[in-house]
Length: 88
Image (cartoon, rainbow, N blue to C red; front, side, top):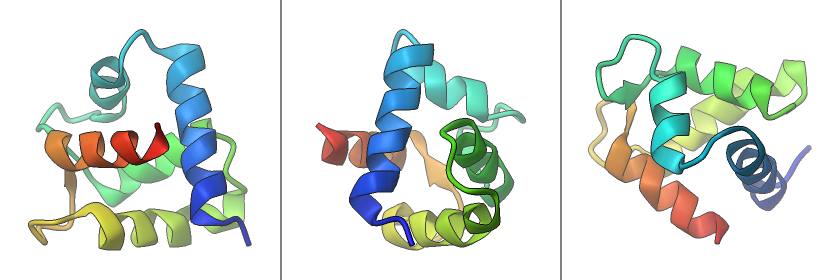
């Protein structure tokens, strides 16, 4: 299974290669524009980052568990930014 570091690296590559800023990436994947990424929106991000198909749901769940600091079941901009900072 892919490690956390490998997954974060793939997300970083996606953001770097396809978006001008992390904010632009966040807005792109926030399909309902509510300022939070749902599990489904995280799955779309992971698929775009070329995380293996059968792993995406499990990885999205783990990302939520690791970065959803307020426990609302979604990743908001501050939580997303925290994940981005881990990539640097």
